[in-house]
Amino acid sequence: MKVSTSQIFDRATSQMSAQQAKVAEMQTKLATGKQITRPSDNPEQAALIQRLTTALNRQDVYQTNLDSINSRLGAEESALMTAEDVMQRVRELAVQASSETVSAADRQIIAAEITALRDQLVSLANTTDVSGNYVFSGSKVRTQPFAENASGDLVYQGDQNRIMVDVSDQRQLSLNRPGNEVFPSVVREVDGVSERVSFFAVIDDFTTGLKANDLGQLQDSLSEISDLTQNMAISIADVGSRMRIAESQLDSLTEAKLRYQTLLSNAEDLDYATAITQLTSEIMSLEAGQSSFAKISQLSLFDYIR
Image (cartoon, rainbow, N blue to C red; front, side):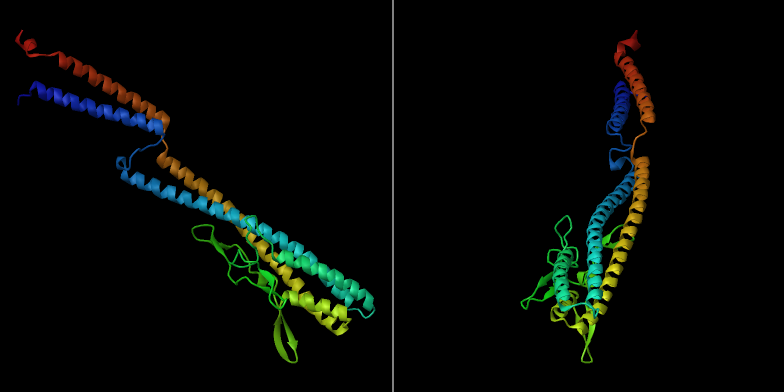
């Protein structure tokens, strides 16, 4: 089969264009530092890169969540530890006031200190985090947890919800503990009937007993205050447990991010040494093709006639 000059030219031109495309592709890869520049270059590898990128982005979200959790739990722990110190002082005063040897005048002095301690506890119960969100209001983070109602009683205005935050693909961690669990009510027997009395009502009743010099009421208050002080210690243990979990999860997250980064780098990043060698080879092939094409282009029909 005869091959025309134009067919030879067309074939040579096509081969050079293909070789130029290879050179341009290698130059683009070197410029971007990526193994593939278009998904169509390697659909399977492109899909793998997308999955790894998505997984790595999720780790960044978990990192942000854990940072928020640690900040929030830090505010909670600080408030609770101070509240425990205050409750320990309230209990010391309750023990002192329940003694028969304490005078009515001394109980008035104790009442004044209890009033100040009660105000400090209210402030701690209404603690906010760095974002201005209330720590002890459940999921109603913009609502002040403890405030006076129309009757002047201090009541809980938050809800019972715990805010659950994703910290891994399989795990969530509680961001908070509702205020009515941290500052709980007690069950009191009144004329054979059980009723719930709020945390701050217990403190207020203790103050009332002090001012009235009512030894019986003061002894009852001591028992309730002891229970509330013990619950505060339990709350501190709870936040401490969540902080340890968050710290452990942060370590796991760091390992997971490193693993995904390594896998993504292997799938996506260019091996520059290999790429430069390949580019040099492709350029040499292109130059050889161009040289051959130049020689072919100089041929004409007269070269065959002579």
